[in-house]
Image (cartoon, rainbow, N blue to C red; front, top):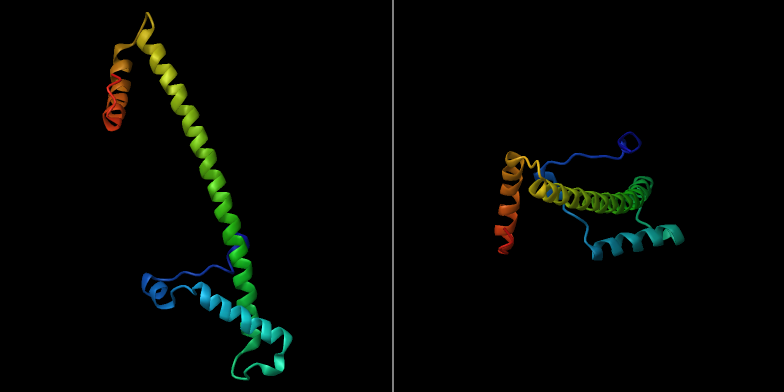
Length: 130
């Protein structure tokens, strides 16, 4: 993806981000309306605007908006998958701790090392399980 998008990426300093800001919804409506007029009634367009550059910027914005939305949805899906894997690993770890705790040949070092994490968790929840 980085290779495919390399020509579209830009790096801005925090100062430049502040300077350029973000076009709010009202201003996006303005840009869209000007683009509509340019498309339907080009004779009404200002000769002082580089319309070829405007068109490139407009098309690039549309493309980047679509890619940004897709990547955001993809990122959310990946984050959700990670959460499920974390939950599965956590549940397996609790089962392993219970096994170690009640096993006849229990390793007391393992029990104590794992118990410290559970104690911290229980204290954080303010529930006296241990």
